[in-house]
Image 1: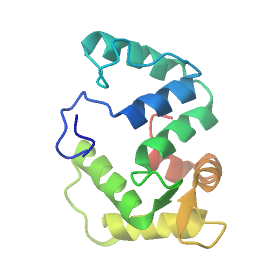
Image 2: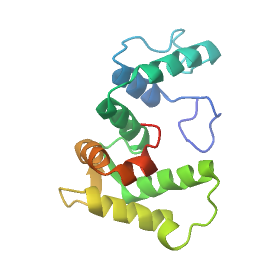
Image 3: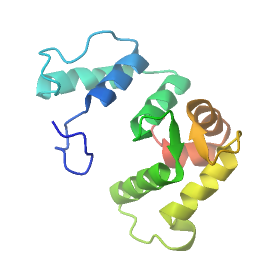
Image 4: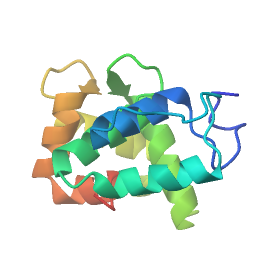
Length: 144
């Protein structure tokens, strides 16, 4: 199974995504048939798990884990710009100039939420920032 997000099937989840989802939902079982993919029935279980994550902090933790593409415990400007681009794609936003430039938005968001000054967000900075800023939370995690 490919872990490259651009080349994988739309319903395919990576082991990292499965683990993050299970951790956030406090469930200990994973991939039922142990083939490192999620088939349709297992996908339905994942949908139920997503709905079980009620706590805002747990949901934001899950979102952070999905967006930390490098698995280094931080979301950097490039990773955040990729996420914003994907959000725009999904929303059908094609005007990405000026204030809507994903790189510019990512830089502004990191500047606002980055408490440590390292120009990237750790999980605590991300969760705290999203909880305290409804505009950023709505952009980055609209369903949370």
